[in-house]
Image (tube, rainbow, N blue to C red; front, top):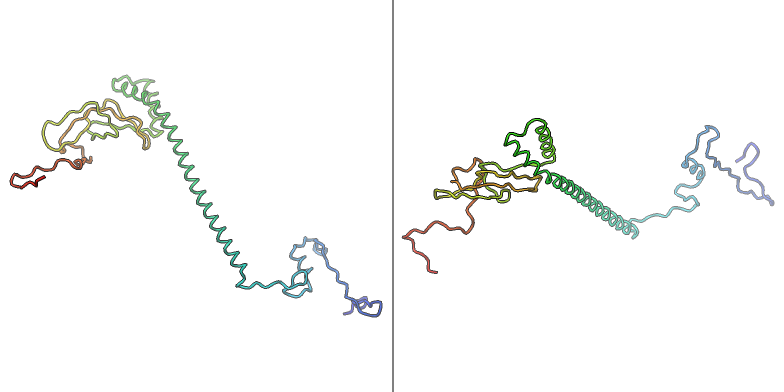
Length: 244
């Protein structure tokens, strides 16, 4: 091919035609538009004239076969890395739950420790209210103290007529039933109120109890069953007894 200045091949010293001179534009800024060229554009200009499927060095790219053992090795490594990632994610999730549970336990323990010191103050406020001395500024302060304790989750329990629960009540006096038959134990007097917070009993209620017939049990209360292995009904005189 000829150019305005003649042929693009120059004669050699012995009349042979030498390879044409190729000029590659490696400038990063296009002189016509003034814009910065991307690496893909520069690479496309440098690779212009190279055959398709050839490497930059002029060598053809190697073909990958489906039964290449390297593929199986890479798949095995991918499965191992995926399993490691899943295991680490599960461990981190368990760690987060454990930390949140421990943090909540510490917060509840701090509230329990603080409110436990206020129980005697609450007892004094309750006795003052029973005697009619809770009035004026003292009543305002007492209401604020009770409000703070209640806001922290403090609950009181123990009232006349409730069923006796040894996990919640401390009986100091027991009055047996007068009439025979099945009975239930109920509270007849509350000497000191009990308190609990969340699932912790801070102080059991000090109460007086008495046995009452089941018909007098509070509405909606669950009557405890007879203990297992207790005495059953007396046998009839006509029924034979088994010898020991």
